[in-house]
Amino acid sequence: MYPKQSRTDIDKMAERETAAYLRRASITYLECCVSLMMTHLQREEVASILEQEADMLRSLD
Image (cartoon, rainbow, N blue to C red; front, top):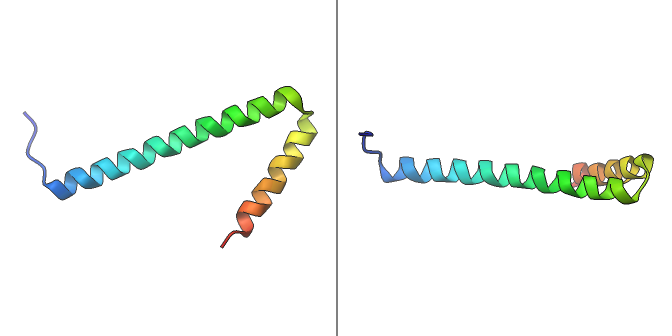
């Protein structure tokens, strides 16, 4: 039998697990997008696009 946990502990655990799931799902989605790009564009084109996107992302406040 597991020890009882408080409602706040369960809420925190659920929040952590939800965030971890969303992170994994986002990475998987990004990997699929990159793979799709690689089937239709040259490697250097994909790299250039991703570098531009990374620069735009870094410039966000």
